Image 1 (cartoon, rainbow, N blue to C red):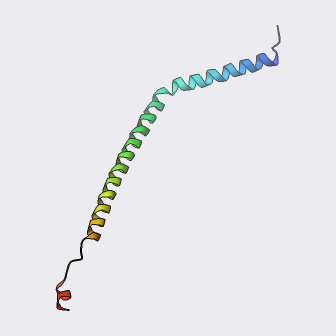
Image 2 (cartoon, one colour):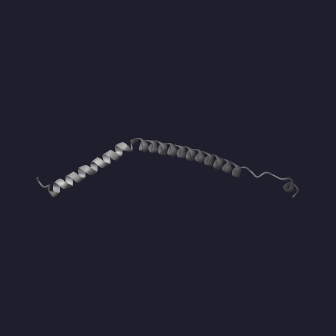
Image 3 (cartoon, rainbow, N blue to C red):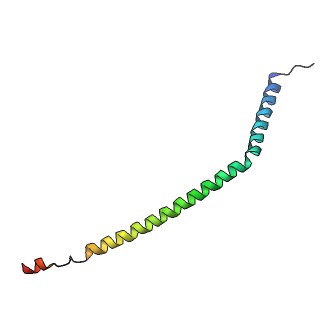
Length: 81
């Protein structure tokens, strides 16, 4: 029997590890795809919510600025003075 050299042992170990990683990738295919799609859906929902909140904030800012420009309402008490 011929003994393996260090280089051949390293190559065998690397091939074994490559096989393990490829096998794990094939076995977990559906689970990871589903998780990825769920994460994409959550991210898109969060982006839509963020855009909606930004629109509302801009609208409130414009209303606040227009209210600040308008003269204050006169009350009956002010007229008596």
